[in-house]
Image 1: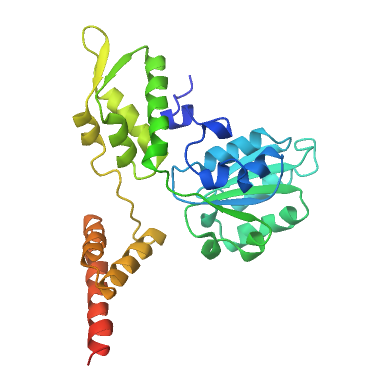
Image 2: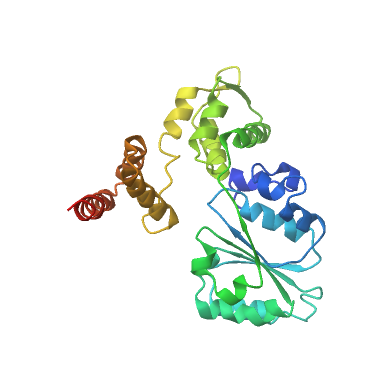
Length: 296
């Protein structure tokens, strides 16, 4: 008996119209939408935070092509896995060519990325890679020059709400339950997920699992329960990633620009994430460079 898939995977959109957010990429007339609808097999790199639809769009593209789909996650894949896929080029295993979806490509080293290069260049392999880090820092230049980079952005709370409602409807049908949902629950979950649709859907599942049905078979989903389950979910911080440097840079620029409210906001985000060292270091840099050296 196979394990039940996560709710976010169960209700993953199958068409472009079901995808929430990313209007700049998927709206009417947008470049990525035109490429997908035309059946293009261009090499693409999807760059953006988790839970914004990168894997979903790659799946939709794969379903519209005649190529044989292979999936790799760079966190666990080895060079042998890459060579095994390449060995299927031109065989009956992949008569129409190969579409390789490579998740978290930033974890592939230069040699692993170079192994793919020859086959990407001659068209035997179409690459769709996703990354949460800046591709211009982590992806081999020769692959970048043969690919189109699309940046995915955090999904607005307004766009997340339909996904939250869809999740409640789906899990209710699956469990044969009825939900009495308090006013404000949809909006709170959508705001608290921090632009991550997967996180919002996981919150829906937790709300349902932690709210037993009453004698009449109705589950009461309260705003208080939603708040308890999402109280820290909107925090976005990576001590070694782009988000870290964006925040500490904004913190220092806020002080330099004499904007106390902005400086306190970014300081609070650093402290909430437990990064007191970076906050103090930037404060000292500002004191030395912007005050001490500027006005000796």
